[in-house]
Amino acid sequence: MAIVGNQCFHSHSLKSHVSPFWNFKPSFSSRSLSLSIARKWPRTFSQVRSVDAPTEAPAGFEEMVLGTQRKYYMLGGKGGVGKTSCAASLAVKFANNGHPTLVVSTDPAHSLSDSFAQDLTGGTLVPVDGPYSPLFALEINPEKAREEFRSVTGGSGVKDFMDGMGLGILTEQLGELKLGELLNSPPPGLDEAIAISKVMKFLDSQEYDMFTRIVFDTAPTGHTLRLLSLPDFLDATIGKILKLKQKISMATSALKSVFGQQENQQNAADKLEKLRERMIKVRELFRDTNSTEFVIVTIPTVMAISESSRLCSSLKKEGVPVKRLVVNQILPPSTSDCKFCAMKGKDQARSISMIESDPELSSLTMIYAPLVDVEIRGVPALQFLGDIVWK
Ligand SMILES: Nc1ncnc2c1ncn2[C@@H]1O[C@H](COP(=O)(O)OP(=O)(O)OP(=O)(O)O)[C@@H](O)[C@H]1O
Image (cartoon, rainbow, N blue to C red; front, side, top):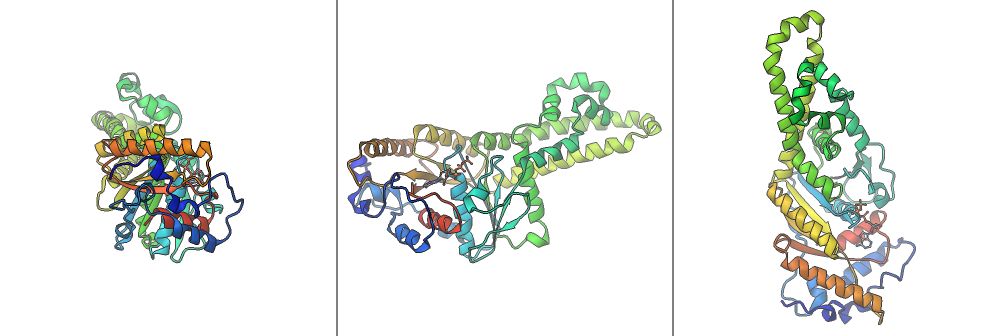
């Protein structure tokens, strides 16, 4: 189908149903009102643009909801595009469709509490009221994750850590391992990776094995990309340290046992090794095509789409399964002769054409989500958004 451009984007068939975004309604209380609006919303942008759109591109929610095997959905993208709203609305929809669901924020700037209009801080699982099946939310405190890393490395810098490992003498020679960088300031993405690995760990326990859908609201693109390359970096660095330690430990063990340091050193080495294993598990989770999918969220602007394209390329390169792209905050057709709306609409239509010709993004299933005229807060609002987006 050819892109019909702005004309078709501003389809008259919809204009009576959706108020323009400046027609702000201050509260979102009526579920029936929401659902009646939701029913009138188009399923896809292609339907908005052209009445003779041959195909729909629904989100494929039927496939997402199928089966009781545990599945992980990671939602990520540029800051502010609506990751949290989309992640929370997906979690609500899963729970409403029979899946005990956990939604986790690993974004250092949490907004899950704001999205659910409920206090979810505190680093523990909090039940969310409303959905038919259990829905729990968790905001992981990145500062705590960082503390955990410091406790592994001793938190007192390279020299002390190396001394602790019995490698003090080699500190100077280890420059090329970027050890200083690793120990003095934890690498970006580490807190998020630790957070994810924590979730994986407790999900392994019997207490939490009921969850069949896990939705992650991840940090903005930059963090995600660093998180993906982090396990390799840690693997290489920690691996080298441990190998080195092993080599010299035999030679010095007699001496060390005299000074009673051996136990401490072994602890530090064990902790590092465990951290490395945990990061490898996170990497494996991201690459598991059977259970994991990364959903990119974007908005129809050149900047957001360019960033999404780079993210998509990196995800594919890293072997992370990515199939869906949510294009959020699409303006409804204008109901007036407002010039601003016309311009904005044209701009969005151009950006969407960009997606369709983008080598990375064009192959993804596009999910078009409208800009709605109420703030998406609380379960009814999320249910409303979820019913529009996840079809
Ligand atoms: N489709 C939509 N229609 C109207 N408002 C929306 C829509 N999607 C998101 N918003 C609003 O946009 C704002 C940002 O959304 P959200 O917090 O979900 O984005 P984010 O990508 O998670 O942000 P951050 O990167 O800061 O975590 C919120 O006020 C949210 O209610």
